[in-house]
Amino acid sequence: MQRNYIRIVLLTAMALLTITVIVLLAKGSSEEIPEHVIQLEPSSEPIHIRVLFEQNPATEAQVSWTTTAEGDNHILYFDTEPRGGEASAYRFSSEDIHSGKYSLRPEEEGMDSWYHHAYMSNLEPNTSYYVMVETDESKSDEYYFITAPDDDRSVALLMGGDSRVGHSRIEEDNNRRKMNERMKQLFEEHPHILALAHTADYTNRAYWSELYWWLKDHYETTTASDNRLLPIIPSRGNHDLDVGFEEKFYWPNRENDFYYATQINSETVMIVLNTEISISGDQKDWLEQTLKEVRPNNRNVAVMFHKPLYPSVRAYDGSERRRRAWGPLLEEHGVDFVAVGHDHALKRTVPILNEKADPNGIVYIGDGGLGVSTREVVSDRWYLQSPGMTKSAYNVHFVEFNEDHIGITAFGMNGDVLDEFMIPADREERTSYYESILQAVSSR
Ligand SMILES: [Fe+2]
Image (cartoon, rainbow, N blue to C red; front, side):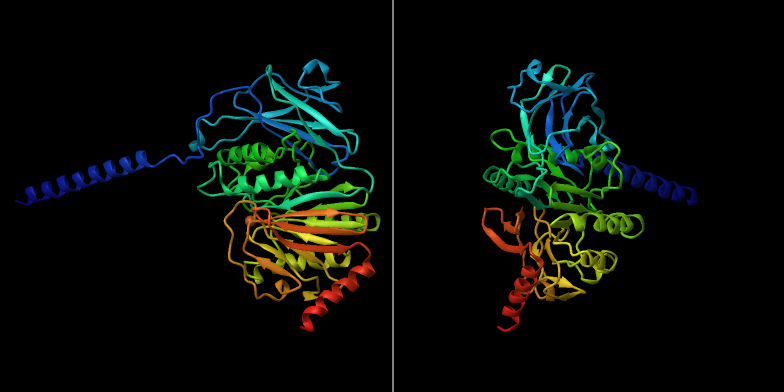
């Protein structure tokens, strides 16, 4: 009797175990492959053609592309005259290409791809470079980009970030592509736009199955109709920490960990910082030294990084460490404005000095809106009150560095002007202008 009972218990347990295993196996096999993980046919056809700028966009650039076959021979052809894609007609070519395989995660099997980075130096400032790339006889079309001027002519940047998108990632009409289309229109309307200065968070994770689509979207929807490429000035955010980011934005002998200063005309420097590594120590020392060097020699010193000092959405206290580490240095050296991302909304602060509105202060713009879902803003914060502003909206900033002022315009997805601001170059004029707009509000 007792033996039968034990047998029944054992058989029941085995049956339950078997059912559990079957259910788990069925669940595993029915787990859908995300739609952004696709099978790529091996091909030497160059895709994702793009340009990267870092410290010296007047004289250095990098042209990069992707192939889905490894290939043996990779060539960049270039010239300062259009050559219509006739390889033998280009005056210059380079076979010194940094190539390698993008790291794949196990679930990305079938997306095998290779990066190819062609670093260019000793370029002429303010010059169109016509480029064509080739892997094993497969040639791209001819594209061009324009190097930065080395004089004081007006130059502009598109500034924005947080272009990671969720489930609509691969849709032809996803919000990233819509914002890219907006940038393309601005790029075509304003040929003095030098580059997109990206305030980071390109994709949810820097995995190849996500970067693949980001690069495709950038190439397909920001390249001007005359084949001018929109160069990228990169920064790194909290969603960009995997190795794919370094493979995508490789730069030979990069000096620091994604913090650097870029000279975009003879009077304008933009300092790019990295909020994802130690914000004190080496980076802070470098920032202080760089500010000492560039501030006396440039009319405009802008700063860009990912996580804000004065957030429009997230907790104010959460930014305390960055405010304490960088705020006093930025103020001491009188940087002209700061652009950030991370909060997924639009903002422009009042001029801030010592954590208070002050006519001698710095204006901060942001906070990311190039495709990621927007967030509700906390509009009652002191630094977002008029003459500052904030709005839950997709946005990109068009920033123009002129001889007598910096012009800042925020455009929404449909091209609507969401904000306009002007920073006079002359310091006295700036202080009295800031004073007047602050007073106009307080006397209301
Ligand atoms: Fe972020």
